[in-house]
Image (tube, rainbow, N blue to C red; front, side, top):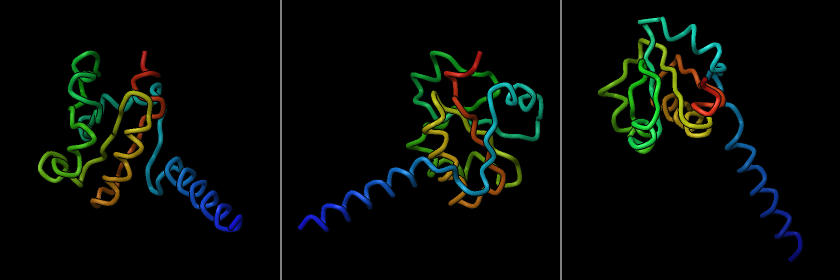
Length: 120
């Protein structure tokens, strides 16, 4: 019986580690690096926070596509030919968004580490 408990604990730990591992093929940048990227008109900027969070404070170049709508809206609103830079409040949701975009076939995906919390 204890063996089964250890198996469940191991599976749980692997699940947690997997959730926080960086996604293969996703570039991670700091908010300092983001400041240079904002000048590039050939990149798409997506804020995956809720509309309320976005309305309260956002970076002008970013378009708001909430995480829960990203899979539905990406095909219509984002180009696979351009790099997509994703931000959220802390970097967690944008990490999830990066995984979603990679699964949808976007090849150039960048996550902003620390999100809006790190933006000054």
